[in-house]
Image (tube, rainbow, N blue to C red; front, top):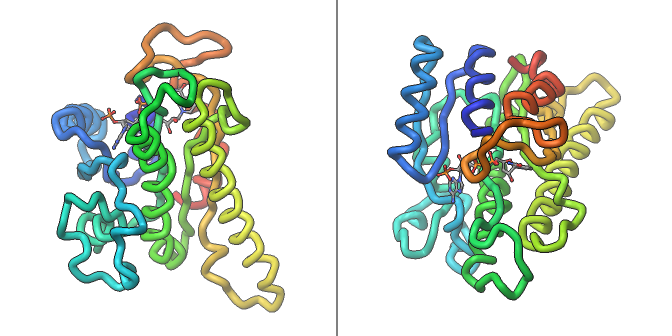
Length: 248
Ligand SMILES: NC(=O)c1ccc[n+]([C@@H]2O[C@H](COP(=O)([O-])OP(=O)(O)OC[C@H]3O[C@@H](n4cnc5c(N)ncnc54)[C@H](OP(=O)(O)O)[C@@H]3O)[C@@H](O)[C@H]2O)c1
């Protein structure tokens, strides 16, 4: 749901959007709704299961230089190769890392209630996918002049450590540290530039947004309340809080 809301906002701001998800039928339905609301915008689909990101043991040493390391799906999803195949040639100015939502079965539980596989998939979906995709797209985002570029990482208040959601909390804390540090590195590039030389790292605004609970998402329905609003209401504090006006 947040995905749709954010996409609508990006389209309203005049951007074409690549929508990522794992379910083609679901994505096509959302794509049709978005197209209806914004007939002049383009909405491309990228289907990939973020919970199956390839581990280090299956990435060759020269994975960054391309090659055919992406060919065997049994080894998992090579995000960098996926980005090259699906996104090469597009003029990308905004990246929203929104995929997540925690382990659903059960939603909350003791650490040992979750299987080895569930834990690995959680790290992949919540953190590794965004980490690799950001690494793949950052060079291009840094080059986007004039206008700059924007990365939004969708986080959670659970990053402080919410009992019975150990994996989710830990992954959100990883993302918070990663994206806040990247934002600091970009700020540092601006500070270092004391002689009027441009450093392309300062070109990207990076923000990590820590969300509280929202309702009316795929796994929780119901009317919004003051402490658990709908994503529409939450969004009022989303893009406008960023430097999006500068970017868009
Ligand atoms: N809802 C809240 O109260 C809340 C609170 C704090 C933070 N957040 C964060 O907000 C973000 C959006 O969550 P949401 O609540 O809006 O949940 P959502 O409605 O379930 O949306 C999550 C999105 O990620 C996609 N997704 C899930 N697993 C995937 C996978 N393995 N591969 C590819 N795509 C996958 C979903 O697609 P499918 O439809 O195919 O599942 C959906 O588009 C998440 O990062 C979440 O942690 C949510």
